[in-house]
Image (cartoon, rainbow, N blue to C red; front, top):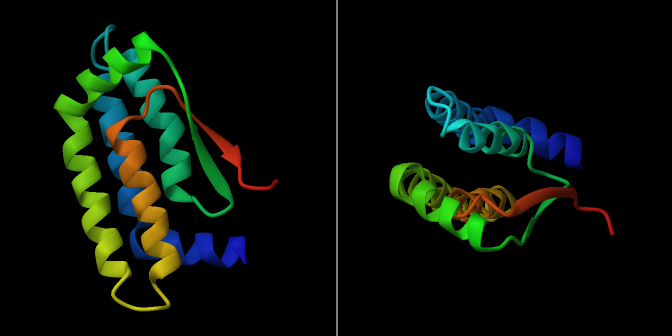
Length: 123
C-alpha cells in the first residue's frame, strides 16, 4: 500500500512539494551561513517526494529553536501555507484524506524543520 500511496502522491502534488524543498535548499546553499539550512532542506525533500511509511520525530534544543526562527521568517510560512492549502483540498474527498494528512505532516515540518528527523513509520 505504501508503494501505491507514494506513486499517487508523487504524481498529484508530491513532486511540487519536494521541488520546493530542493529549490529552498539550493537558495540557502549560496552562502556559507546557509549551508546547514540547505542540507536540512535536501534531507526533507526525500520525505516530501515519498512520505508514506515515514514519520517525523521532533526534538532539539536552543540552537534548533534559533535556526527554526530564522527559517520561519524566510521560507517556513510560505511552504507551510502551500502544504496546508493543498492538504485541505485533498481532504475534500474521502479518498484524498490520507494524502491530505501527508500534506499536513509536511506543513508542520515546514514550520520547524530543525531538530526534526525522519524515521520509518514501522513500530
